[in-house]
Length: 373
Image (cartoon, rainbow, N blue to C red):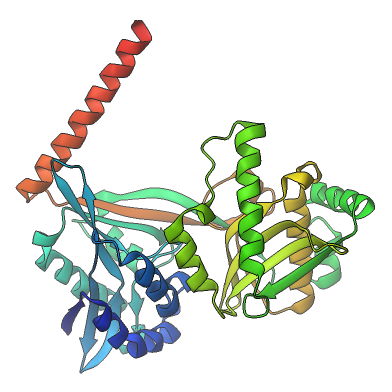
């Protein structure tokens, strides 16, 4: 096998055809590993000088059989900088893109990690997150003496199985959150709402509408619920730029939402990426004016009903995070792990870790002093 490492935007574009060919052949691939999604991320965040492309391409017999979509991020602590090798993009699932029919996935992954180790002078830490349980990549890492000790549990991604439901039984029996049905009836009685599900190619103004709702929800949680930790991803300029790129004429970005019939005021929404018959949920929001109705549960019910009727989607992935509300809808989930391994052979790395540890000790001592003063 031969290895090529892509480090610039022109090189990124030059592998588009191979990447898109491989993503059709890789059974493990999710939307977060597609060329379209990752290139949109790079066009936005690649402008940051602290992000350096490090896409490892593996070929056999002059045919590309594996791609590791990586970047090296520089974390600047002023005194010492840390160079972290990890996946590019934002998402709940990350993976290498592999042509397993052209050879053993383990053999391809092994070559990719050999390239990573051969360039260990460029990174202080490997940080590969959101590795799903059933992937070849995680299996390789777990069976490897060097990497296994650095594998840690990260989170879970609950999911709702749609494909096996009978249309009538699935809607009317215990397969559905019972309390949510009561909320639906109350909202039906007290408002004149309608449910819609569209892709972002069909609705040009959808981005602005959901952005406004999410910002209103954040302000409400700050002021009324004391949730000062709450942020809106639509208030960050770079995130705005990235998500607008993703939304643009993209029929794989799906929005389901509730709105008032007479005024088109949006009550609640949920955003998904559609890939291979599966919806990957990645953002939700609701209008504070309708918080008392539990409108997100209503939206979930309406979404499930529509998907059952259409019969084209097999699963709804509720995204990363083991929150109680997700498990009120399902008992199915995928466990996610991360690889976080320091390159302790580098003096630079050891100095950085000492600095971080020292700062942690100082913070702890300051807190203890404040408690006893």
